[in-house]
Image (cartoon, rainbow, N blue to C red):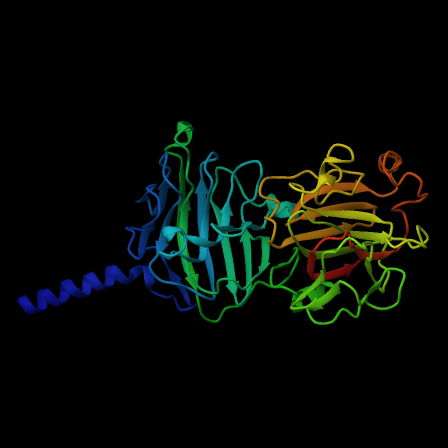
Length: 455
């Protein structure tokens, strides 16, 4: 009798302890048994996690770091789903493919985070790189996705991490589409964001998760690519991007789509294309203005995406609608310019009007509006994008934050040009088509991941 009783008890214990990990017939596996935190562990901070009414509830605690309730198991490719609800004052997130290593910031959890953001910023479902690169997919680039999250209600999240692609959905709405290969595998976390000891009103705010499940086999991504793709892999282009009409202007190897401004071939002095970059070397002072342009003209509607890396104190620019009727005998092309500049060191940042010569501005015409965390450090890669729409609207994006917007040909645009150094160039910025241009301003600057889509 004792043997039978012992066996029954052990079987019951085994059944309870593995309930959270049992797979259904369609391959879904529950990560939460609805009763306790079996299969999870807490890292970094001291926020509280407990089970209430069949949900995991995280409660904020003042003066403690970000706190993570972490799966004990790592996951590579998967589809993850859950339902969640959060107090309007609390920021939170879901970490995926994340790590905690003693030799990295003393064990700080780092990796991809799918945002839970009930604030008016409305970035829920966007992708942030916790404790590494910052925002990878802010929702400035997906205004429709901003509307998916419902405040004070349960929201359904779906995360598809398959190969190098991470896609997120909030209440069935596609929100983020990221292509990146930095971390192919890691644990999953439920985050409670830190709050400062100065803001006691946030202490005790809560976020809840339920119906937490994962699928790791027979993965089928949701059909359709309705939203912008952010591709962080240098000089690459995915099949999905090609399908949308994107094409490369530099593949990391050949610069045959570029030529010297005023010439027919790629310049032999100071410009180079190797090691995955197109680079202009610093001048010794004897020459500048050796710009390069695309052999092809683009317009009136297009999107141009590029990455750039500045050396300290460097000045350069990316120009569009470059019309060679202007300054045809000179070395430098004239066109609308996405400013590329080390604002902290180069004196040009303090010239012009109201900061209209700072990085990502429409040079000498419209100053960029810099949100927090928009700019990477000198020596790191920044991503720029220029969007020209059918109605003449032009937008500058810096690391996927929209920082400039204007309408070509509008009276407001003409008035701004009239007050700029381009006032004597009749029709400045209004050409139907023009070259794209990478500027030589005498400083060391590198470019990569140059791609364009015409509409």
